[in-house]
Length: 164
Image (cartoon, rainbow, N blue to C red; front, side):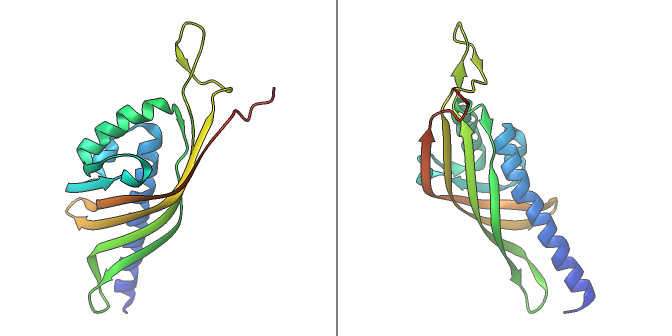
């Protein structure tokens, strides 16, 4: 592998990592246009193992926007990333697969007097964990997600961690 190929591979790895991090941030921040922009035009997402939907990324973004209203606080952590970059005889290709574990703690929506939604430290916490499988494709605008599949392994609902 030449230095030029090695540098290109490292740049691809960093770019792919930025896409995966962008995915987590978009979901946590409720930035649904950013979420859609991370996908190829034919990109698909599959959340069925977590009780969700499967379909084109734009449709799934709409479902997420509605569903995530129940969780005003989200902190999506994607860790233990394993990247397999397509190898074209020593040169990086235009496809990549990433398997990464996730931990997704969230706070369920609480209410103040009058039923106004607010951050409520007594609201229950919800957490889930599992593994993502991402299929990425190099496009004219950079790396984009072609497919993402959630493989939920566990979930938990607990009371508030706030002192009584």
